Image 1: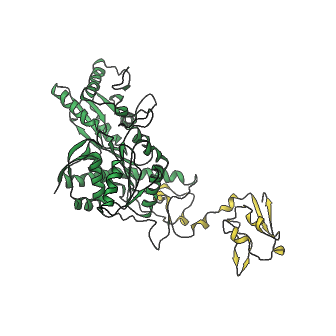
Image 2: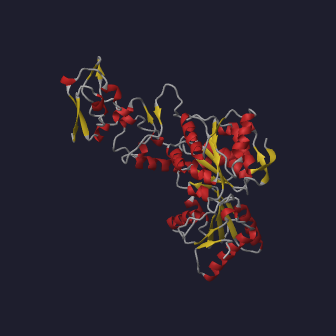
Image 3: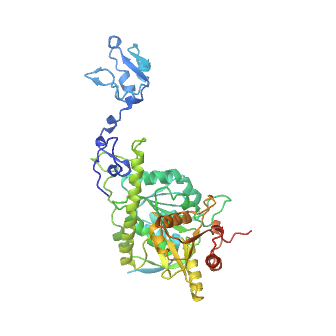
Length: 104
Length: 393
């Protein structure tokens, strides 16, 4: 078989030919789920209201998609490329600092 | 130096399993393949192999464990029959599409119902579209020989596909025959060490098996899988040639028996091929130009080559030990007719369903098929192209 031209899924594109598929679609490399933009799935968008946030950080660990970045002990705005809009963070926020907006 | 021994088909394949000494065997017993995990677990208990034997709770789990183990990089085997094989169904496709060269010993038995434990090919034929390579044996010797070759075929870097090594339930699996065994060290040298290029148990490298693929890549993955099966044809041939050098036995994709000047040819698979050869011999003595093709490699199907081999025949009969319920052909009949059409060959084709649920196949019954072929030629009329052999009515 022709050796796989593109062993790393990161290099795969939507116009990939069958000759370039890895055997069984196996994936090599780390952290490749970052390349899968699950944000496309979202039907409701969490909006971060910084004024109400006390930086208690209850939201970040409950996010199933690691879409609430935390830097120097403080949460930042959402990673909308990966947030699926599940709303778990909004339910867990004690201060009303996350609002879900339908259709955004 | 080869050794002669008197073994049943199950015993012969169990010896081959011991000689190969695979890494893992997950299995669940079912008639008539029960003896395979039974014999093998005694080899494990006696320390004759260092295989991890996993007594799973079902065949679904057996194939699941095979997939995990093979993906981890371990040479993995299992064995089953009939309903147990059917219970693996979903996972057979996963094994093939994940390109895992598991070797499965299939002891062919009818599918229920009515519930029946005897031989036919309905189990193996049900999985003919699963992407596995399928090799069928006429007798105990071929079951042993095919089993040893299966590892080299499936694990070849151009193939990376699972292989099913099939033998007929009871007729082959429990019938005792004098066969020749290779020395243990010859088998070990022939199959070699399993060293997959990529595997899950490989510290320091990141690797994932069996990802989700939506419509943008699934079709390309299936096309690539078909290419691997295409490559397997050459590999099956090369391995057979190498095995023949070692053992003095074997053929590549199918065996041609008295086909040189044959006007009437029977295409058949499994233990009934031996009975068919007896029928051919008897007819030859009477001056009938009869011949037989015995299929060893059913998947991939050697369609073009079979079409060429029968192109000069007047009438051929395709023998299917299963019912496809399409009311026009069995699996062998359908594949042969497709090949003939593709090659533009003009040969009259009869297709028979025979031997279901262990129905006896005799020289007499198979001779009647040749009589039917002669009749078709004499009257220049095909009549019913899809017939049932030895069914009362």
